[in-house]
Image (cartoon, rainbow, N blue to C red; front, side):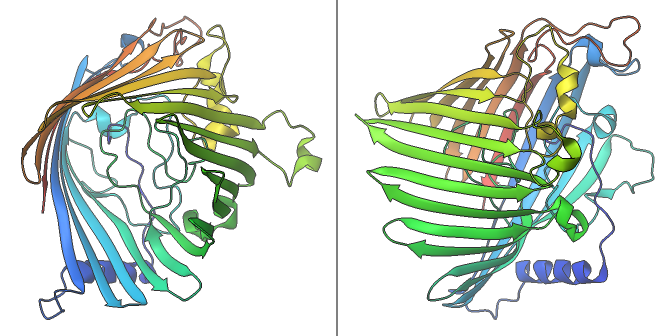
Length: 432
C-alpha cells in the first residue's frame, strides 16, 4: 500500500538512463518481432482507500479521516530471443489523488524500505517535482523489472532487476528480508524488483543451489547482500538452508514444509548475527535475534480452507509496559525488514468460496503479549474473465496511544495494533 510518506530515489546516471530506455523499448517493440517469441501483458488497478488514525498519532492540522484513490497501470514484456536467452521488463505508472498529509508522513510506525536493494533508481515521483509543494495529486512510476535470463547446460543465470523472495510461511516470513510485504499491504501480486545477479543450479530430485549478489544503494557493499541457498527434498520434506550476508549482518535460515495426514505443515526460522565481523569493536551480542514461524493448513471442503501460524520475534518487546518506540532503533528494524514490534503472534486465516465467482478471505494478526489484534477480511467478485471487483478492511483492536506531557513528540504506546489506523478499501482490476 502506498499510504506512507514517499521516499525519493537518487538521480539516475547515464548508464541507468540507458537501461531505462532499453526497458521501455522492450515494452513497445514493433510488431515485426515474431509473435511466438514476444509477449506483452499487463493490468489496470484502482484502489479507493479511507484511513482513520488514532488521535494521538495525528498532526494538529491533520483531518480525522484521510482518503486516497490510486490508479495503477503496469505493462510487462517478455522476449524469448532464443532457447538460451530471454529478456524481461515491467514498467508501471500510478496516478494518486490523496490528502496531502499522506505524501509527507507515515501512517504506520514501522515498515521496510521497499526499494532498499536497488543499486541506482530514478525518482519515484514524476509530478510534482521533488522540491515542489505537495498538493493532492501525484504521478509516480517504477521500472520494476529489467533483467536478462541465460539458460546454460548446468545453470540458469539472471542479471538485472528481478524479484527475490524466500520462505514457506503464509504470512510472516523470517527469512524473507530483501523486499518483503507487510501484513497490511494492499497490492501483493507482484514482488518488488531488486537489482541482482543470481545463479540457480539444479541438483538431484527437486533440488537446487541458489546463489547471488543483491546490490544496495549506489552499489555500496555495506548496503548490499550476498546469499547462498540450498533446496532439497528429503524424507518427503521440502528443506532449504539459507545464508545471507546483508548490511554487515549475517542471517542463517532454514525452511521445512511437508504434508501430514492431509494437512500441510511448515517451519521457517532465521537467526541473525547483527555484527559478526565487528565484535571486537562492539563487545556484545545483545542485538543478535531469532525469528521463527510454524504453521499448518487444511482444506476442510472444496470451498473452505484454513490455516494458523505462530510467529516468534526475539527483536520485539515482551511486555506492553515497555515503550514500543525503543525497538525501532534495533538493527532488525533498521536493516532486517522487521516491522512487528512485539514478540509472540498467533495468525489464523480462512478462505471460503461463497460461489464459484465470489470468494471471502480473512486473517487475524494477534499480539499475545498486549492482546491487541489486527483484523483483515476481504471479499472478491470475478465479474468476468480477467475482471475483478473487491473490497475489505484492516481494523486494529486494542488500547490506543496516549500523549504524555514531557514525552513529546512520541506518544505512549499501550498496545501495538491499537496504534494502527482503521483502513477501508475497494479494488478493481482488469488484466490484459
